[in-house]
Structure formats: C-alpha cells, structure tokens
Image 1: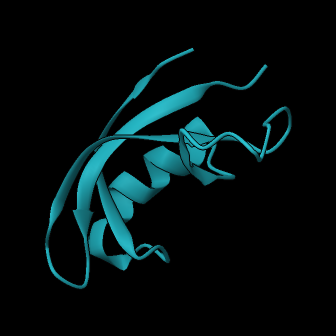
Image 2: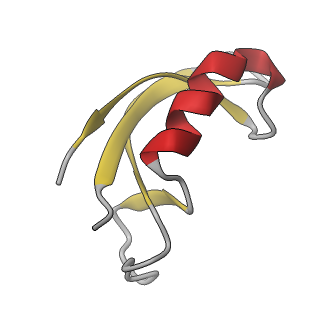
Length: 69
C-alpha cells in the first residue's frame, strides 16, 4: 500500500520555500485529486531526493517529509 507524504523544501529557480506539499505514488492515486502537488514519488524516491539535494532531477529540493496516510 502506498502513502501520501507531506514534503517541505524549496524551489531551485528562486529559492522560495514551501511546506506540506502533498505527493503520492501512482499505484492507487486518483489523478483528479487537487490536493496532490506531485504524483509518482514513493518514500524511497523522496529519501533519494533529500540525499541528492540540488543534484536531484526535480525543479525543487526536498528537505524534509512525513507520512500522512
């Protein structure tokens, strides 16, 4: 079973911080869910993105996360 995660971090282009953006894996996600910021990130993906920091492939850097459900 996959979970929803709340991520915090900042945008690479302008350094603006964000908190509690919701991300979700694809396997049981409803893509019409407007509360989800980004689809396709598992907990393992989030952990790797945190480790990579600025070197991640995303337009944002994740600095922290928590499991929501």
